[in-house]
Amino acid sequence: MVDHVSGENVNQVVDIGNGDNGDGEIGGGRGYELPLLLFGGFRTLIDRLHDRLATEGHPDLRPAHGFAMQAIGARGATASEIGRRLGVSKQAAGKTVDRLLALGYAERADDPTDARRKLVHLTPRGYAALARSAAIFDELRAEWAAALGADRVRDLEAALRNVVPAETAFRLDATSWLGAP
Image 1 (tube, rainbow, N blue to C red):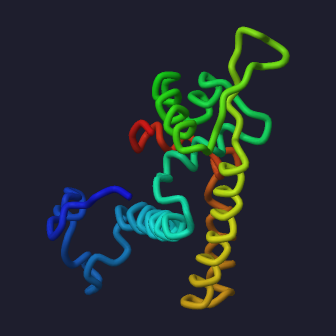
Image 2 (cartoon, helix red, strand yellow):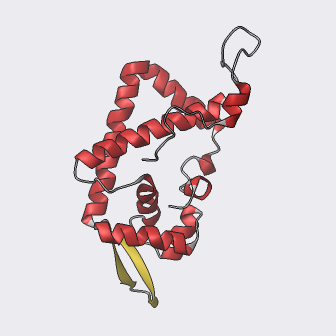
Image 3 (cartoon, one colour):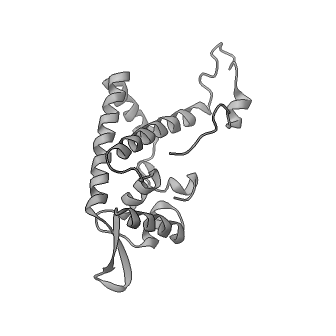
């Protein structure tokens, strides 16, 4: 999890735009709120996922590790391929891979088709962490459905599918604009 500055609002857009928007609703409907609320929802889900993973035997996993494990995929990948999939340098990808190796979530092996290449593969521990993550995401979605109503969650998902281009819906390169993994 990323630390935040306690008691201090560090978002200048919100500071500048804070107040009545002219229709009597404080802060409602301002353009900057949508991305912040979407990101806040994302952060809430990811933070809760990692809290749960930590209590279930994966205390050292970080969000960047999840992105990297997805980039490794079922067939494995080289550090260069992982970097391209994540939108980071080969060196940044290599650093994350080294951490996954040290934690036992991945392993390196010779590429059977090219002796010059090393492939990174997920270990059974890596697959188990991804499977547990998927199950926890299902549980978190169910909690949102209980709080908001199942129809509202389905409507939210459908609305987002309508405005998020299909080619970017499941991109892994968020780390390229949120910072290196």
